[in-house]
Length: 60
Figure 1 (cartoon, rainbow, N blue to C red):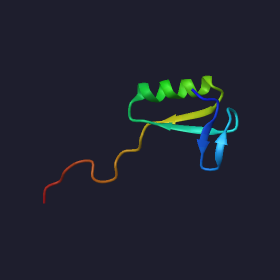
Figure 2: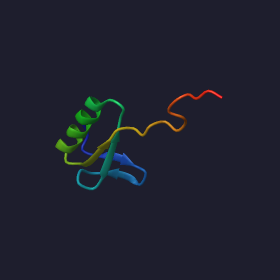
Figure 3: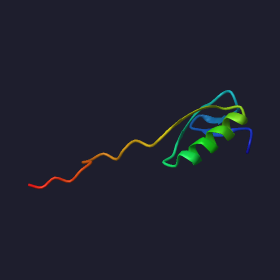
């Protein structure tokens, strides 16, 4: 893994960036978050938000 990440404002070194990891697979989220933390980045992780729209079908 490289020592910098690309951001909208340019490259950021470890300790300069706060990263949010979002993935629907908990194992992938945790693995990536741990790897980034190990590299010195500040990391938060979150599951994806539920899709917008009805959660159940209704009959009329």
